[in-house]
Structures are given as structure tokens and as C-alpha cells.
Length: 420
Image: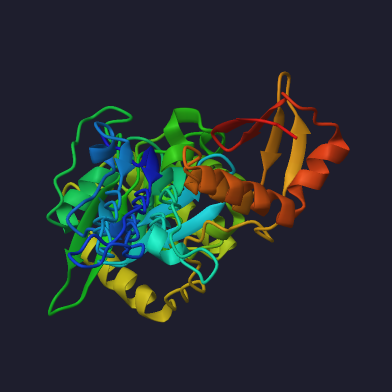
């Protein structure tokens, strides 16, 4: 089975906790604070592996977490940073945010790498909080939680030429004849259930990549016959070979049907250069259709060829002409790189207060981060958190909203009881 879609969960490593420690040395009875900072959590990357050609490895595993940072320790020792996690994907992988469908990155080159989840920074140890007025702080921070996202991965086959057509037109047979690809071939429709790639080698060193796309039917642009899933695999091609079945009831009508589906799916795809190729010229029906196909294609301004993929008739001239056309079709300029950026809020200081059934909910990037990094078991840390709420204007906003002593206030995954 060919897997060209996957949904995965990625999470950067949590930052390591800072530590509370004091110097304990001989002849230094009142040593200062020496708690070190926590280590940075590992980042999560997606990287192109040219040896992969499907997303099947995500069927068994869909959750990926980078290594967390180590805890800080005494003597101002910083915790070890967590190792980054690199997840291999095939060429042609498009990454989207699963919830919104927002485009994040398009990985097409071998070794191309993109950051998809940042690790959290390490929490500060008590040595970082020492000041002239507080020379022995008993305060440290938890590590910042790593970013987490659900991603949708979609693979689009990368080929120079895409072979399209009705089921049983001979697409797989043609690919097997002109390349080393060995797709499954049988004399019934829908034999091909996955795109197949083959490298076509001409005389000398000329070559190009050809993709055999599963047969399309009427309604393919709306998903009929799995067409919607497979049409995307010809979006990256530069030239289309529209293979017509010479033994079909009406090859010209089939040509019209497929082109209508291309227009419905993507006008840009339908506008790609196209060659009409009548196959099965070893059969009398195809020979009878050939003059009619020539005339119909001439009226549309489409170049027409006649071949027999089984006997090899006309195949070599078709390949030479295909290579010539590829040289005249400019390679699409890559879009300006759009790296995967999981954007912070327009301002991290922004916050919102909502009333839930049994509590108040405070939302905001910075306030949720501060809450996650505050060890409330330390009185100094809790007092510092209260001062931060006051300076950010959250305390006043909660009072204005009507918070009362004893009410529950939720910030991130923390639940706090409001007191005067």
C-alpha cells in the first residue's frame, strides 16, 4: 500500500529546571547562591531522506518528542541540553498545521531540513536571581515547556513528466517499457493503486523522470476513484503525457473527460503542456481511431503521437520528442522559501480573561509561560508570580471582571485559588 498522507504529533523537549543551591565550602560559612540553570530542550526537525518514497513509517509511530533539558545543579552547573530529534521524510513532502490547514513548509531537496517544534529554554537557578537587596534567593524556575503541534504531511511525487489517462489505457505498461520501473500490470481497470516513478534514459546521458499516475475517471476531482488523492501527484510535473486507450469506445471523449477533471481540480494543472498519445496501435480499433484523434488534437492545438507500448512502435520517437519539449519548458522558479514558523502571538504581553463554568481562565503567551515555569511550592516564586501578574495588568483585569476570594483561576495547566 502506498502511503502519501500522515498526521503526526511533534513536541519540543521541555527545558530543564533551575536549581536552588548555596556554596558550602570550608571556611566559607555563608556562601552565596550557586544554583545552575536548566538545559535547553531539544528541537524537532523534519528532514528529507532521498531513500524514502512513502510516508508508511508514520503508520506505526505518530508521536515524536525531543529530549528534555537536564536539571541545573550546585556550583553553578548548567543542565545538559536535550538532543534534537530529526524525523526523516521523503522528497516532495508538504507540511501543514493539522488544525487550520495553514501551509508551513515544502521539502523538495535531499537533506533539506525545517524546524517544526522548538524546545523550551531552561529555567534559571537561584544564582540568577541574586541582587544587592536579595543576596540569598531561594527562588528558581521550572523549564519552559517545548512547543507542540499536530502536523499534516502530504507527499507529492516529484517527476518531470506525468502520464495521465483513463484506467487500463496502458500507463503502467509504457512506464515499464521505457524505464527500469516494474509496476504491477494486469488486463483490468485500476490495476495501479499508487503512483510509480521511473527514470527514462535516452541515448547518451539524457534522462528524465516519469510518473505513472493511477487511472482517472469522471468525478476524480471530487474524489471519485481515489482521484482526488492522486491528482496532486502530477501537480509538480512540467509536462503531461495524456495516454488514450485505442481500444476504448471513444478515446476522444475520454480525453475530454480527463481534461475537465484537471480543470476542476486545478486550473494551473490543466494549463500544463500536454501531449496526446494514442496507445495500442497494434490493434485494428486504434488504427481506425488514429486519423480522428489526429484531427481532434489538431483542432485543440495539441501535439499527437501514436504508439504501441506492447510492441514498442513509436515509443522511441515519443521519448525523444518528450525530452525536446522538456528542454523548452522552463523549470518552475521555486517559491520564496516559506520556513515553518509557528508564530507567536502578535504581542506576547496580550492576554484575555474568560469565564468558564466553575473558574476564570486567563489566556496569553507570556502569562502561560510564566505560570508553567513558576514552582509554586517556593514562597518566593509564588510572590514573584503575583508581582508579575500585577505588572502585566492581569490582577487589575481579574478584579474588574469580578473575581472573588476563593475563586479558581486557571492559567495554562495551573489551577490557582484567588486570594486578597
